[in-house]
Length: 375
Image 1 (tube, rainbow, N blue to C red):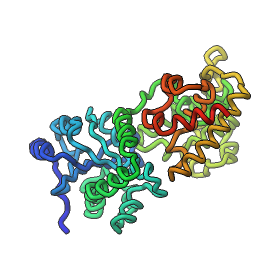
Image 2: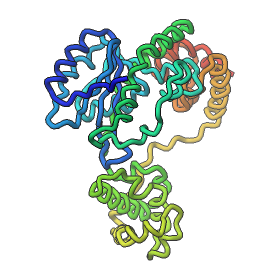
Image 3: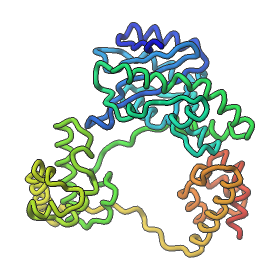
Image 4: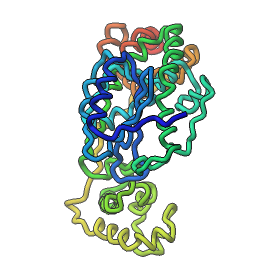
């Protein structure tokens, strides 16, 4: 089988964009280098029409992707993705491209109760297709792309058209098409949150530290960020969050103290020990009146009755999810259940006015929720 062509110039992209306008459905995917670079970027775009599969190299010199914008923003043209969340965010951030008319086959699989929803698993189940998983961790910024990488990238979209035909038919039979269409509409608006404020706000576990430990952690995170940027490597490839949290908590004063921390290897101490100890000292020398405080949301008072209702709602969810053959978290998440347990709507009108449920959830689950809350 011949390799999918790769477009590397603006004129070819413009011509292909005009071709895409002719189809009511196109399949789309992208590859990024998030496991290899400090700031991940989109390195390849894949498109499959009902007639052919083609790749676009956004790293090609002076290539203009703007002709793709009206195609991908047109809600009259369906765009098939598998696990679109990250892709939608990346396309908006890197190129200002919006996606409208989304159909996400991973979300569809979740709402059909599939146990395994990864693309490789789904394609193997329905078509016997084997995707070579070695390329999932490939560095897609490398050029030229190998033949294996090109074939792998093309396969990500080549089968989506026939997959949608199968899955949509199942959705219709189960009466769940409207459910996923609402999910798709919400997902189209997904964007990366701005990275502002102290770095410790994005470090899981930082909320357990006292102000002095937070100051040390922030210095460690700032150092890691600079080092990762300098080396053009992902943050975790410099040092992970867990060792940094431990260092900030213990605040060792020498290399030997660093070596006693889980996840801090002798090699890492040889390479970064001096920098880590300097960051610790900077945090320890910060004046008391400048120490950071981890921001806390408004602390909710304990409500024993609400906690009882939460347990009832979880029990109801477990039964409802089993009846529908869905994962409980797909049906409705814990955050929504907690809000419901606290506001305790008593009528359909109150439940609707709460704004907690999506439209499909209100229609399908509303009665069960109200009944569970009245037990």
